[in-house]
Length: 114
Image (cartoon, rainbow, N blue to C red; front, side, top):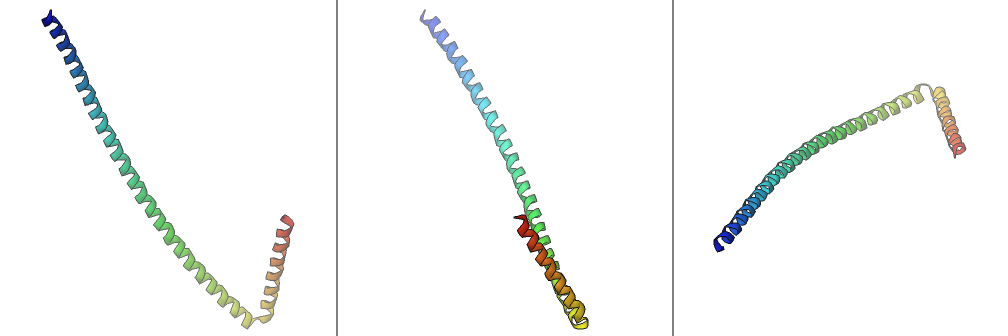
């Protein structure tokens, strides 16, 4: 009788041991899978960061170039305006009055829109 009980207990323990080993193996596989996924996501994140940094640098370079172009245009406009003032003072005066009138109209329209 003791032998039968011993064999039954031993059989249950073997089943439990195999079950525990299977559980451990599945946990190891899951851990490896998650580790690979985590690694892949980290690499994707790094690639996205690098791409965004490049885009940001490109945008900053474009902004700098645009700022430089604006400064050149302003300087050119000032020079043209000064030439106009010197060579054709009457036309320059009319132009200034036209700009003032346009500004006044824009202010008036802005006040009407409120």
